[in-house]
Image (cartoon, rainbow, N blue to C red; front, side, top):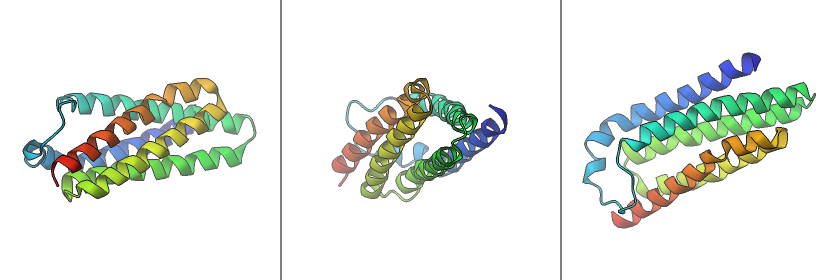
Amino acid sequence: MGKSIVATSLATAAAAVVGSIASRRGVETWYPTLRKPRYVPPNGVFPVAWTTLYADIAVTSSAAIEKFRTDGDDAKARAFTAALGTNLVLNASWSWLFFKAHKLGPSAVVAGALAVSSADLARRAAAADPKFGAALTPYPLWCSFATLMSTDIWRLNR
């Protein structure tokens, strides 16, 4: 995996840290005051899910980028890297909109954009190797679930 694992790990860790800075206080103070649908998991599920997903994103993205490079397709490697950067910005932005700014409607829209972006990353990873696409599939599935949660929380708290 070479140096791309370092880059993808640092990028996903940065998104995680930026998101957690925005989330920390809101999770403890504001979030408990919101009306939530019954299907929302307990708070302890989220750090486990996201830590697992961030590791998956870093490792699978690195493998896809390296495969493109090994195959001599630097354009696809660069395009994947750009798509990953966009995805991680959307990822961290959601936390700032939701937990820090308390903007439920815009955060639901960003969650939807993140789900689409995550599906695009899985598609791009599958183009490098179908196993990579399968490995990244939990990410758009979770982001789609997060979009549903965000939208229902917005609806319940208007």
